[in-house]
Length: 467
Ligand code: SAH
Image 1 (tube, helix red, strand yellow):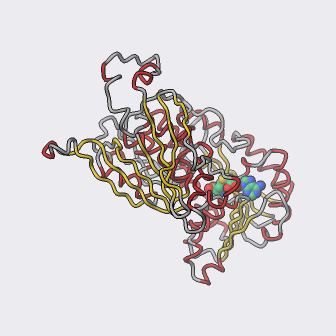
Image 2 (cartoon, helix red, strand yellow):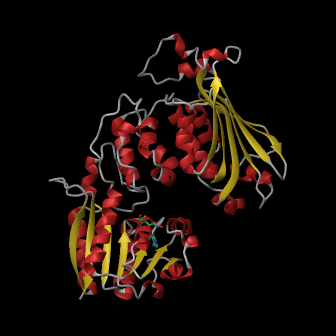
Image 3 (cartoon, protein in one colour):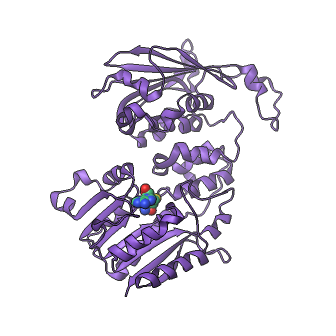
């Protein structure tokens, strides 16, 4: 099994790929896997062009022996199959293991290169791909890749036998290396559609770690999740609920996969993220806000909607994370804006726990899914900065309702790994009342999303009005 990644970066020597991957171009390194051996080697390494190859040799006998004990399989197919030759979920596992630091986007000596898009070419000569080249294009093109996918003939000596279920894949594009590796990690098994290792409950976490934002924004997000999780509908539901927290997940469209015989039609549902945006936009309309500051704007999904609405004459987005601000700039298309438009919208870095004069002077401030990211001992500082010092006429705060978590099957712990806490309805209500009375606001608490008679709604909104 073979996968190569090449770069021809004009800004830096191409051999910097070695730093990004944490693998020296002059060395041949082997990494034992439970099912075989992964080898990393650079067939070419010049300043102009550098290629790394990941070779995976699968030991079919070892693979058969390491199978989960609860799924005994005594068939010959265990030993005689295409695993040793075809890229598959095993290659994805090896890639995730061998390039784990690069997948996290960490490269101390070349962090700027790791953070930005690189000109990359990825080749996988033999990739099992159910549905053929069209399916490979469908999954990779929305991620910014130019896809060259051709069917591999069953036997070149007998063209009349037609195409095999393998494609030869070449991806070219300007993509951040960590994203490219994570996309391969998720999409190789999705294309192959047969996972070869045991799936535990942490599979959802693994998927979200690799998938994150690019997956949440993928038009086939739902299909990818279902295929990745091997149609385990419970896990898929958990993963989709959590991805909905990240982005507008495409509405359930199971008919889009005609060969998915196990798919159970589900009623179309509006993602929670969309409902949250709607609730905030409605509250802003109610109070007649014309200038709005989005505090902790993240990748700018709400800002994008605010920018598109001409009722708003001045807008700002603040975040402590520079990477989020870069994403927000892309989301609102800051570079493509006319000068006048660009003056209407500002994005800046700031910490909400420190007084900052730039936070003041807006009709309304939005704190959407932000307070639960702040350490409880720092929360009082945020309250003072927002309600006490910036003190806009309206403050909108949304946060998850932890009581609703029971309804996300399989979800243990918080909805997001960075949440420092999640409140019950009573806890949120108590916080709202205390903050309002301390800083001279009145507050109304609303639910966002489907109402469960016992657990309430998945998310909650506090509408604070000054005076
Ligand atoms: N409001 C966005 C993002 C929510 S995620 C949305 O609903 O989609 C929380 C965001 O708050 C992250 O982008 C994080 O970087 C930011 N954040 C957390 N603590 C912060 C702080 N103290 N100051 C500024 N931003 C903060």
